[in-house]
Amino acid sequence: MKIRDNLINFLSKIPENVQLVAVSKTKPVEAVKEAYDAGQLVFGENKVQDLVEKVPKLPADIQWHFIGHMQTNKVKFIAPFVSLIHAVDSMKLLKEINKQATKNNRTINCLLQFHIAEESTKFGLSIQEATDILNSSEFMDMKNVHISGVMGMATYTNNTEQIRQEFAQLKTHFNTLKTNYFSSDDHFREISMGMSGDYKIAIEEGSTMIRIGTSIFGSRY
Image (cartoon, rainbow, N blue to C red; front, side, top):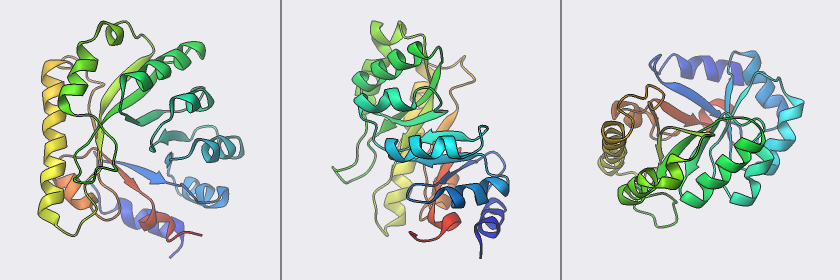
């Protein structure tokens, strides 16, 4: 099936309240345009250089999400246009995003990334590290970042019960932050979890945003 058919088929399987981020990393501009022409507006990239190269070649109303590990020295390149940064895993990074957003006269939406997986190679905060950030005077002084929710990646495993428990843990972290820090903030509502192999479990556990590449674009070109 073509990208359009894949996209329509996939959207028919997920609830309306779950946003689909089409992961276009490694895919050519033509593939992104085909998905855009089929109605997809939200795309995710994980490399700054690739994203910066694609943006001017594609329609201006695309919402670009940065879903990879973000290096502080590269924030400045995407700050003028990025819609959402999924993987904020340190105060240092958050401060840089706020700095670059201020320079561009923007407010940049961010998700706090939590380490919920078994693998030590995955990035992310602990709940204590997240609350330390949110309790800090530095964070309270930031005017150009907006925390929109949380993000996490489950362990790469066939053990579905482990995946379910890890996603449930992320939902618990979301609930804790919502109750203690964002109870009156309607903007804090996103739980970004779930990819092509585990999105169904993620949705069952409360995901509001899934990151899907292979099921839409197929294998690597």
